[in-house]
Image (tube, rainbow, N blue to C red; front, side):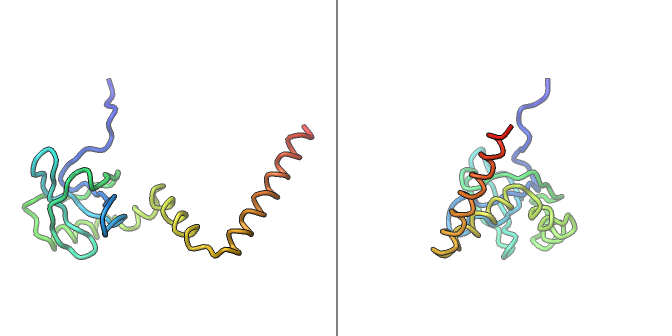
Length: 131
């Protein structure tokens, strides 16, 4: 029987922060401390910190890294695995970009979006009514 789970907590698993001041930043799991905590290496500043598993979300990306590797070796594995490029192609990253773009709209731009949506919905309703 196939497994239901696809993403496992493992050495080299790429994750992102889901809370705190580093929200949406990428990190790599370097060592598993216990069932609730892991040692992660931040991709932005190469710092290794202990994180609760509730504070990170796992991605599908995995690099070759373990606790024996130095910070530079993990950074090289991330660079070699082309993690940044693969991350920008994921649905989660695209969703965040869309959210940030919508949040940065001015009042007039939000008004225009609302008007265009109304126009689009009217055209769709008209097309469906004619069938």
